[in-house]
Length: 254
Length: 362
Image (cartoon, rainbow over all chains, first blue to last red; front, side):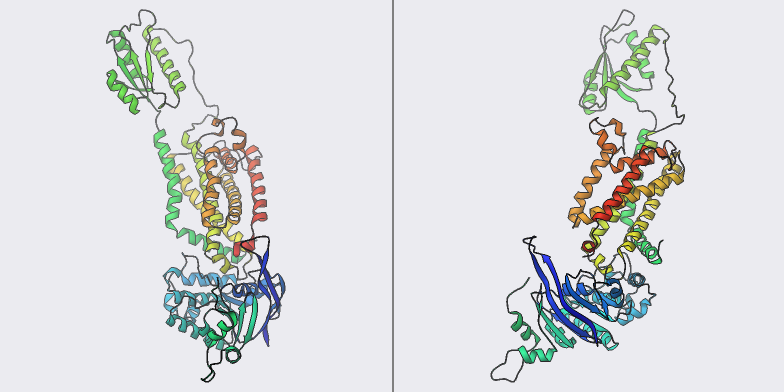
């Protein structure tokens, strides 16, 4: 069953160097995500990953195309969609003066839900930080707290935008474990990442985006089979990073 | 109708603010310090420091000097020319009266010389008049003539009014302007920059909930802080509020609403923290001078007055002053009340027109 159906999704912005012209940040992409799947959107900087997520989350207007989430049209009913999704954004700053429990209660209120702070913090391994301020958390703890905030409404779908960027290997592994656990509990997870290892390890399926388009979409293994360069004298090998570089080229982006 | 979400969010904003002890102390301390400073400097009538150089040293000149000394308007220092001139230059003396060698009032008119440092004296004319008046009464006493007229000044509103009574409504207005602009414009730019707004708007919160909460929280903050200053002024300085407190607080709420709306406009116009500071300063600073906070608008140059009267802070200062000093009710539709209503409507219109949601959130 598809929980997310995206068809010809498009978003254009004025060009920074010439405001009169526009460019398509997301250029007519289509994809489906099944319930309980971990779906990764992989791409270089500026590929349109975050814009795609933000359109699905109802943060950005959709220029054209449709996005259905759990049967609800995002364009028509953004607020109904917001109620059933959880979102972790790239920037995860919070009001400084509130502690974690107060922030969680606040987020619960925004969904009109009474929440159990301890239970949520236990889920993300921060049960000893109930009265800590966000500033006092490490990078990895901050990301896990972000996920706790995204879980206050017990969402059907969890959107994670580059959840492990800037984390050390331990914190990264720890977060992967958390994502897997949430997925086992039945949550559909959509994440964007630069990290090939992450995509390969976590995702059931991956879409590779470049220049606003999806240039490949499949399971990690199939992508490797299809696109990884074939070494002449060794058995078939390579990883998703090889696939990525083959497809998007080696030029620097930004 | 205020929803429980809006109420909760207002409480959160209030909590955030009350925990920001630094800004709270600063917000309350500045106006209090100001009032106190003016209070103490204004207590007792101000005397003019004046030096007398007695070159005659005769009975006439002694008599004259003694009478000048008796005048409460002057703080008299006698001394030599060199000494007193130095004091005049350093600003210790406002003026020096030089009594000539040939001074003798029994024989016709004697000329007195008045030395002034024009660059240091703000109101030469007033001082000259004051000195001339005093000389006249000295003359009468010395020549034993009765004054023909005596002027008894009576405030027709029949109540004492000190500068601090005049200053307080102005300062309250200035405080509420800063608190409101800071709470709406600055907060929004800051929350946007740090991605906090974006995080809030991926939840099902609607813009109106967010705005209502900020407005409620800010009104509470303004009421708390202004009450502190007002309480201090009433209890410790004996400032009297002629109108009802209901009218005063009603006016404070309306005024806060005006500046919150304008603050939301600034928050939408300025994209960065660097941009909002000069924008807001260029709005507040001229008003501090032009809106009659410290001195009445009527003392401004004639060309500026008509413009100054229409500034939002001016109408608010006027409104608060007419309640605090003249005891006008909130529901009296006079010109100041009318000005406040016009600004409330105008600022609300501007705020709803220019407040761009998607940009605020993204």
